[in-house]
Length: 260
Ligand SMILES: NC(=O)c1ccc[n+]([C@@H]2O[C@H](COP(=O)([O-])OP(=O)(O)OC[C@H]3O[C@@H](n4cnc5c(N)ncnc54)[C@H](O)[C@@H]3O)[C@@H](O)[C@H]2O)c1
Image (cartoon, rainbow, N blue to C red):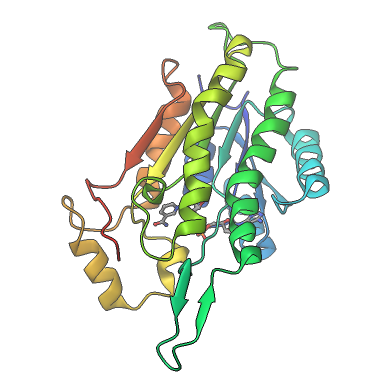
């Protein structure tokens, strides 16, 4: 797909981290970018910086996502590109014994469901509603109507202790990539997913420097955290390369996560 100012894009989670880097990279190509995010102040700041539009959206809500697409399309027209970066995680063992008093507890189901609703169902909600809109577009010369990029995680394949919900949600994103690409192949819409390793984003900002250093040292090569621009580079490659379809790609410096 040729990216220029005739193309509109929606980036979920675009207020921060990997999504913000992708919104900037798309805008640098002239693309009109709408940011869907819960974080109003940060989202508005990124939108102002790139000449885009911010839509306060919660990807777990049908009404909120519908209102976001209505606002984005009123400003820029129907999007040809969707990048799903909105996501979250938690760390709870499936069942465990408290160190202090030996009491036994299990992963609260509402906490498990919360992660699934945002990372998996929220991603699918945005894909389904965006793809339905893309079907109204005239195809470009190569028959292409749209391109979608999702964000899973290496935790989809090597989840760590406490990551049952996160890994299930990201494994779901990986698992649905090919069938969605097949659902949409007759309409000229491509779908791909990135599995990031450990990236230097606000998600990790709370971690103390020694923890970040240890994480960086655990990467085979290069021995550092991933840069959000590197994620954005792969996202744009997937969008621009017409033969890229139905694929799940790790972007991780060769890391395979240990149990903890
Ligand atoms: N940073 C990493 O190392 C890493 C590794 C693997 C996967 N990922 C995935 O990449 C994606 C982006 O992560 P990031 O590191 O940029 O984190 P981030 O926290 O910087 O960005 C995530 C954004 O998603 C938004 N968001 C969360 N819940 C939302 C909801 N319900 N509706 C709308 N927006 C919502 C947040 O407000 C935030 O702006 C996530 O899906 C994350 O799981 C990140």
